[in-house]
Image 1 (cartoon, rainbow, N blue to C red):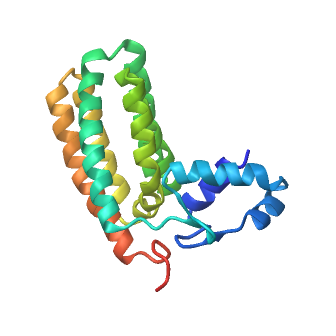
Image 2 (image 1 turned 180 degrees about the vertical axis):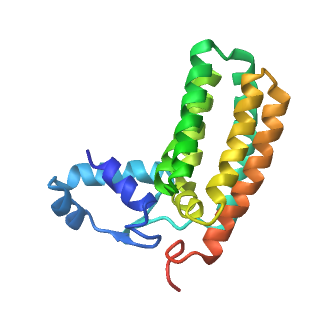
Length: 213
């Protein structure tokens, strides 16, 4: 009950990096006791969205350029492996799910809905991880992905970024649907290089992506 609204507030930018998260204030705003707030902050720390400092409190985590480098190196390993597994294991139901999410992504681009597109892109990756059929891989990927979702949402609001992302997603999906694991992995690598640069641009230039000095 507490984690989802806090996660969305952080990813959506309502709680910028560096914001101190008061258990008392959050409990009052959410209408709960401090215990579930404390547990939620611990979960968000595990997700990479919050930093808890002894005797100082909890703060919205700031993602650094070094963090991005590590995150995208890890994503490269996980996601290129995942798409190869999907290419080998894809079922008719899985094909339909990929085609459906791509159709939704095209619709969001057509309506210039970057928030909706980001949600569908999250779903695209979630479907890939599910279709890969490896629960451990899926769990690790979800943990790795959470800290960059705020930067992704901002990046998708930039001109042409949604369209560029959609082209990459269609190439990745097309290779998986064709059973071409190597092609899917190559397309995923290209997508991640572009996505990493877009995230770095947000981190360095976009307002509210970093805390004030």
